[in-house]
Amino acid sequence: MIDPFKRTWWMPGWGEIALSSLIWALVSGMLLVPGFNAHHDPFQSVSRLISVDAFGYFLHSFHSYSGDIFLIAAFVHTIEYLIKRTHRSYLFKQWFYLILLMIVSILAVFSGFLSIGSKESASALHIFDGILQTVPVIGGQLSLFFIQLTRNINPFSVIYLHHAATFTILTVILTYVHIKRLKAERYALLYTGFLLALLALILPASLGHPADAVVSVVKGPWYFIGLQEMLSWMPVFVAGIAFPLIIIGLLAWLPQLKSKDRPVLYAIAVLLIFYLMESVIGWFLRGEGWQIFGR
Ligand code: HEM
Image 1 (cartoon, rainbow, N blue to C red):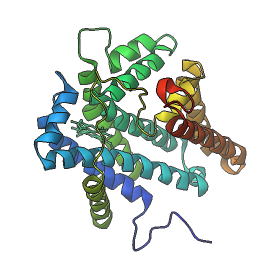
Image 2 (cartoon, protein in one colour):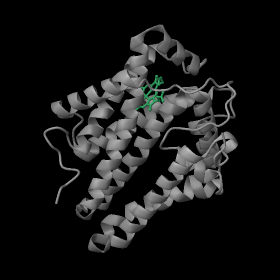
Image 3 (cartoon, rainbow, N blue to C red):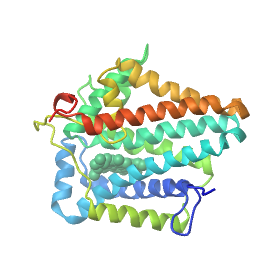
């Protein structure tokens, strides 16, 4: 049988692509720092950066795609793990670190999007804050820590700090714990770098709309639209907290089940397919005011 995950001469393994994208994200992120002003008007600073010279636009797109490819490659790599039943040989502690890595990876990419201060990121930041607030007992504290909407501090600079520091550092540490190295294979690094550069050149990444723009519908990044769709018809706590917690709980349970893991794997697959369907509805069918077929 053909193994879709097997590395070939024309493509490195998905794990190597994820690691390479992370390295490219770190490099391009650091190059973006001097031109980015999270404290005043982050959107204005990125707009200036991408309009001043072609390299600025390239850098912004390159960094943005490095986050996307990192998430996609890490996701496919995780599915590969689950299909090959790798979890059966894991100790709970190692598996727990892997699940943490999955969570902070998503937060690292998402917080990058939240930092840029566009209409889309402001709306996603508001949604993120609303979700945090529904966490019993510590919701207010979480919101204060990640966003600080209530104090006199620009929320974009707080989330940017978490993007470039907290989540990035945790992602790097947990990646090291997972594979005991932070150096990608040279072939995979060049392959991914070439792919990212090509994407950045032929398909410059969108920056979204300025915060004061009037738009009929505001959609977040591709991995967030499913959640936006769920929030349009489910209680915030169910969509934003319970749903991800159920997936995390099922994943965490896997190593204990050993060979009796089939029903849990099916349950995870059903939840992921459900999320995919919600994303397709949100992406293609929602328009003005988040109405079905709205224009
Ligand atoms: C040294 C660590 C990092 C620094 C200093 C940094 C810096 C930045 C800056 C300044 C921005 C806003 C400017 C722009 O988008 O052009 C940004 C956005 C972003 N970052 Fe990072 N970053 C770092 C790590 C990462 C990592 C590890 C990832 C993902 C693996 C990532 C993914 C993103 C994404 C997806 C965006 C949003 C881009 C967009 O949608 O326009 N960053 N980052």
